[in-house]
Image (tube, helix red, strand yellow):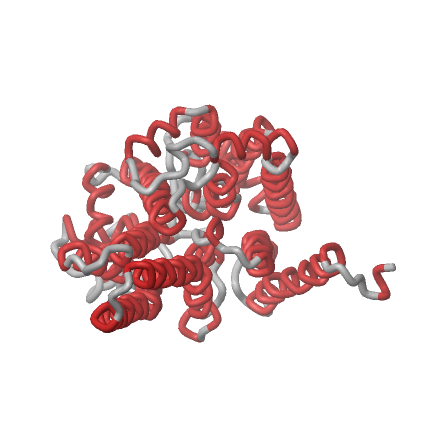
Length: 448
């Protein structure tokens, strides 16, 4: 199954060039020109073939993904997991970068690299956003203008705007992302292909940043590192692979500091006092996340509530300590308050995922873009509600399937948006009915 998944990655990467913009030339080599012409003739000019091939790839990708994940829950795998969890390093009270990076030299990490490398050299077939990232950085570095105030059409002489979308609007992201995007642009030294490739590598770096943040969050929340199945569930999901690596979206750069902010806040709230420097760092991380994309502003609600609860806890314990002098009662009160705190910590991933899901339903989001689900999906290893977890997994499938009406019609004209919404939500409804029928103890009459 692992070999099949790597093969799927290669096939998708090849398929992605069927949607290369006709006025974009990535390579001048003859072999590439012949290959590109072949992909256009076979797929691009035949919407039925294009859509069918895409649907087959997505269904196959998720089938392999689910099959591998199910293998983690076989008897042998569960027995191995139990032995791993007994390891002192796996269950810990202190986060160690050395430990999480030492785990990256395992066979699992090699598999992940083999899975990602083909997608690194794929084309961003389903999104043009990376071209906007590139040109906005170019506006800052070369033209010395603010991309949040000026638009790409202000530079009609630029060749890069030929294959950009949203050339008539200023940068829709925060200043934090504009600052970050200068890094891969400088690496690309102003050359289109090198810049395009450096942005793709930069997207992979966002996965590394999220890996560190999730492991830190896991240690501070539940006193253990993420297991291999949990890591696979997030980082090897086809939605994450395609939207982050192939389409080069910047959403994980928003989520990594947000997750780290809450991990640091958990570490602070376990103390008997609130260190101002650590609290400022946690706030700065969340603020930086908001400056990349504004969606994480909703996380201010649980962040502030945690501080209020901690303040109330300290105030109550101080008042009780002044009146009670029995060590046993004080120990019991401390234990009880810590137990409540652990329960609150366990709720944060679910609350955060729901809060980040709500913006997807607003008019502001215009439509449920598939990569928006990444905001919610990164919390899935910590979500204990099985139905919500199942819904997120189904949405990761339907979010990629919703590209099919756009492919078939060649644009967003007509009823494409309606069909996309139907695919997204009807898939979830049908899956929930199936989930109810299979797992609910009392089977409906039609199931019999």
